[in-house]
Image (cartoon, rainbow, N blue to C red; front, top):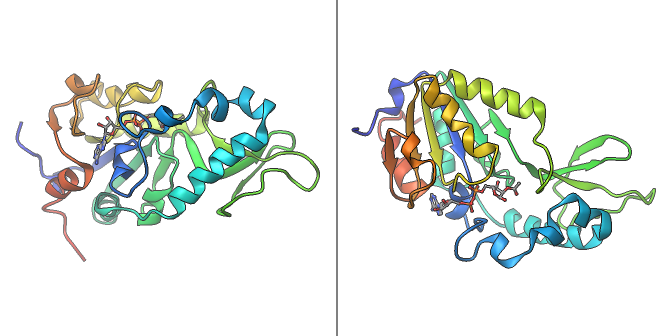
Length: 236
Ligand code: OAD
């Protein structure tokens, strides 16, 4: 298949993973230097770990907050934000928790795995967006804020999943960028677009277990390949 013209599509979904932010300096999860190569998620990214040692879990998340706070959106994030301004409908469905799509200017963003900047108190039901680095996890009343992230063993939020499914089923182009496609249920969502007849593009330097579901696999980095895809996108 030849590289399609982005401007020919009416409803576009960008389905993004950690590779989207790799060129911003945010480490991916798997592969060399990946977060889960260095940190055991059983100790830092699941509810039982938080119940046992909330302070240690916050130390890990404050480290991640400080790292991501120092990163800027890359040219790929900017292209996706620009696409939202000039195409009839663009939705970002992201597995990323870094907030870099929003920082680049994307507004229609569905965060499947929550946000590094979100906190919630399960005792009171409160939810807040807090950009403090470091964030003080323990509240004045002795209760703890918990990172509002979908950890291992957690369920995804129904409202977010429903909105993602609706956008993916209704799109005419789905572009998956920088995801290893091994974490479920997120990994299977793009197949809904294929079933609905959308054009499917995968951007990733490497093959993934889902590559066969795509009409065209662009083997390269997010910034380079999104740059090619967006060649006809009108600028300001
Ligand atoms: P992974 O770390 O599993 O995969 C990153 C993907 O990005 C790999 O397929 C790389 O080949 C690709 N990649 C690396 N550099 C790239 C670049 N410059 N441009 C484009 N692609 C590049 O990250 P995810 O697929 O996002 O969940 O992982 C899914 C989920 O697993 C995450 O949301 C996280 C993690 O556990 C939670 O924390 C709940």
